[in-house]
Image (cartoon, rainbow, N blue to C red; front, side, top):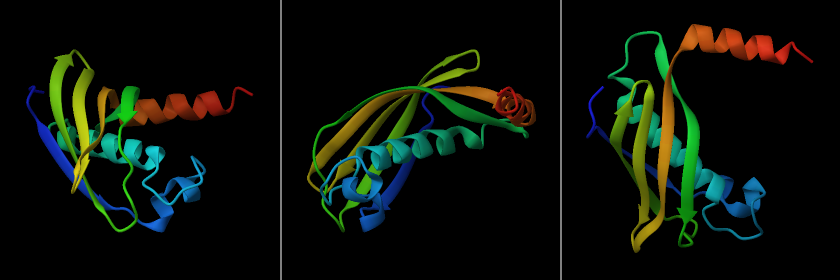
Length: 129
């Protein structure tokens, strides 16, 4: 895995991804949880093709700011760049924009995992109640 890998995703702000619909506020603007999901999606998809078969990434840390409101019908573009590779830990810089400028930014860390082993551990944890 090499640093410098970039990703880009777009999303239209619909009623389903507003703060009102997602329970993170009372207004019809792009919800912070929706922006975070777009940031994570942009990061993981950017490196997916560089992973060996059977491997994926999971988010382990996200330091985010949501700096501006985005109304219904607006297109949000999210861009990521892989800044650092430390063993299996990947660190990304992520930014989200609408037509008027930057609406949010984040430093996002993901960890490379073997998917089958990871799911086995997750299922075992679910049965420890």
